[in-house]
Length: 450
Image (cartoon, rainbow, N blue to C red; front, side, top):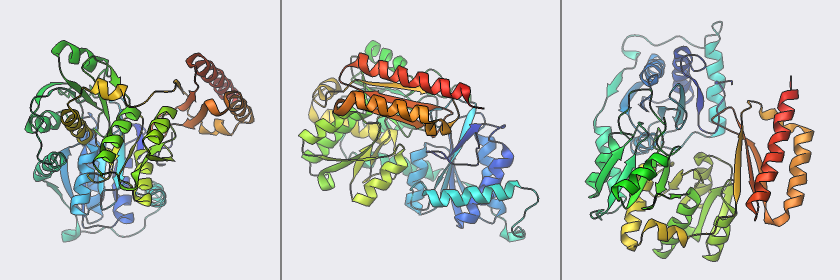
């Protein structure tokens, strides 16, 4: 993997090998050159390598003459909010849902939006130049021109206040919530903010040790949360990933609600309260066909974009819409955030459940009928496989067989060395067989590649 290239959510790699301190230092310098600002905001998740890499990035920024406001351990959406609130560019050191030995660098432009692809390409070019020891672009500042790192605890309190503001003074009193923070960036914040909102809170996955982030817990492993919800008789379970930008919800019976189901529930509620401008939402190509049918029946239009909450946010802004998201649980409430925010989504969901007087299970049952969808991840780091004539031929053959009653999607992961296969069909066995056929072709072509 070439870590100097951006994926769908920044740069990721194995910490201290693929993503080294030297590269992080150069990244900080490149960012300061491409996005010139007197001050940058920074935060990180709980990974063992986080402080090392954050220090290196901050040193690079400071060496170019800019100061750094250090928020410490902070969810990605919290740093994005700080970027918007203070109109400053920002960097987050996190690999989101990846295992602890990976880490990553996420970049936000002043105003809190993830930087567009053209600026990412400029940063990547500057980074490559800086990593080449034979090239120097200018004399480094010295004396008073050198930047510094400022620890600012008020950033945390401001973010908590912002989150609570989203439920507009209403209380969650009477709800028993089970939270799983994935031993990540929300470990201390999530129990605090939901308790401040009035809920009774039971928390798991809130004891980070640097290497247990996402380890059998959080949004990528909701089984533990589901068991605890049932055992404690909780009303609702909320699981976040390592950097807390996504949410997976569990009902009182321990059943997981998909991001698509949550989007239909939220869109319906927002439309009823006249808070859905344009009466439209944005989803990605991964969203289930059942979502499209359900929202169509509600008279809500659907715009489809590529994978990644940055693409969702850009499409929302371009169309003047206010809500959208991904099946994975990245939901963007544009009134309150520039990016997906798991704790914000959890607060709004708990508020919706209480206002409706209904259990999440009932809301999900009334939301949509899912079309069977099979997802398969192929462990290859060769996106060029998708250019293979054999792969293209198999994809077209499957699409012809499924017709209008199904879909086939193949794409490289933007965050891991994987190719992802998704097949939908009215019959789950048909979808599974098609996904297995296509996966076998991908594996065979990969084995034949040099």
